Image 1 (tube, rainbow, N blue to C red):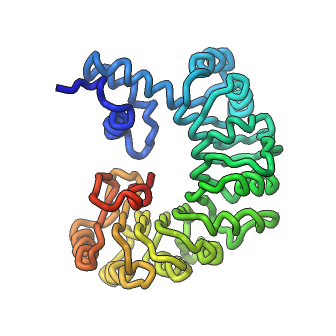
Image 2 (cartoon, helix red, strand yellow; image 1 turned 135 degrees about the horizontal axis):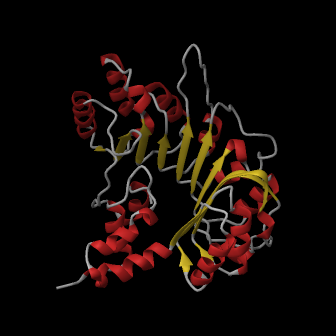
Length: 346
């Protein structure tokens, strides 16, 4: 009989993620507690704990000690906040650490110099989240190829255009883009070169924009031109969605979608019977003719925004069209291997 320490790290990670708070999906918050389950969990849980590091205090001596311990490891994820981003990025570079996912959020007060990052570190990243005030850029040779697969950008805190141009030009495997925006109607000046190039290779697009509008707070987010340029999309995620905003965005989609994911908490709080009919009608859109799964969720993700009767009606409508209705839960399916990454949002 297999014991816990014999499980592959990937499977153990899945088990531990199930114990994590889904609203704050950081394994590091829960991994120390796994040793309480059984002594056999201690070593694998600690190995996983050290692979996801959150640097959120200006405690340089402690960071130096921690980075010395991980210099020979591959960090699955490193989170840097505005208190420590500059110093920790320097220490990561000095330690020659290999990082798969780098998350830099809220680097305010002074511009974070991205130029201190080594090309080796950048080239090994699979995921990069940038949200802050930046300057400079790592050296990226014109003929370089990096491993980056997923990029997250905030329109209010974009990195320098030259860095984005070089980054995207060297990232042929970059197929996932997540955009945060508030009320912007178009891309800022200076970014008209890199983003259209990226659009052509995207398979997944996530738009985290508040598209709701009220008489006192009118808002309009129009990214439909960019969506239309994403000619290879297979999955689309929309936050603050309504049936009208979903339909408007789908009209710009130029390829058949396999996965649709919509966050609808605000809309669901005021939706009536007519609104539910409009939601079901979304399934008739031509871009969803090959849809395999539609996930609706709210915040926190542990909740389903639709009332029980409305949810049942929506689920029945999905199944009638061969679409699998989903909520925040994840589970494996028998879909072809080439579709699994998109369908599970990996």
